[in-house]
Length: 109
Length: 115
Image 1 (cartoon, rainbow over the protein chains, first blue to last red):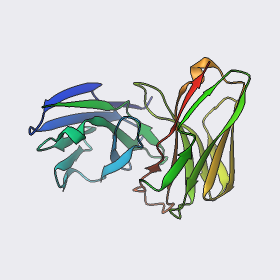
Image 2 (image 1 turned 45 degrees about the vertical axis):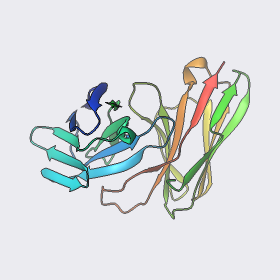
Image 3 (image 1 turned 60 degrees about the horizontal axis):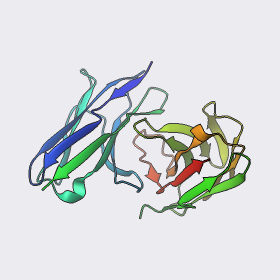
Image 4 (image 1 turned 120 degrees about the vertical axis):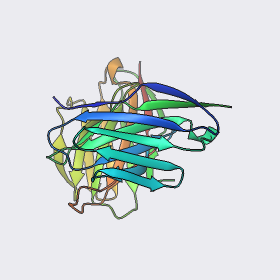
């Protein structure tokens, strides 16, 4: 079966750096997405990786290793507003999106 | 604001009620989706519409009935639901470019409670 694994919950301190990991086993690979979802709000797109390597976008970076079936989302200079759930999703060979259960990130002062 | 509007935001209904969820997007997208989000579970794709035609129904019980009258509007009609159907129902839209990198634009969802 197809599977996306990510930690259920993580805690970090304001101003610090946190890395949220995502591992996947899917039927083929056509890209990996990260979305951010604040409580009670819509998930919003953060990043898309289809080639190996690091994509940097301001305080957020996303890394992909296709050979290892692994990605991470790196958040720098954490702010209280970064408290949210982070969803990892992979597009498989049928162009279906396979979702992880999300990682709830708690930022403490 | 993502450009996708869902109403109502909250809904409480009994198992014998009939209600409808509404979704509207004016982003010019040609694909619309219904997802179910339960606590600590992955998003579950329910229905997909491309150019107003239903292209996917992921074994969803018939008590959920989608309707897509045009490419900007999507409805989910609910009847005789079960308590286990309580969840956040998310609507999303996306362009159809066929490149695989199409990102989804989600609404804020309808939090449904079935009593």
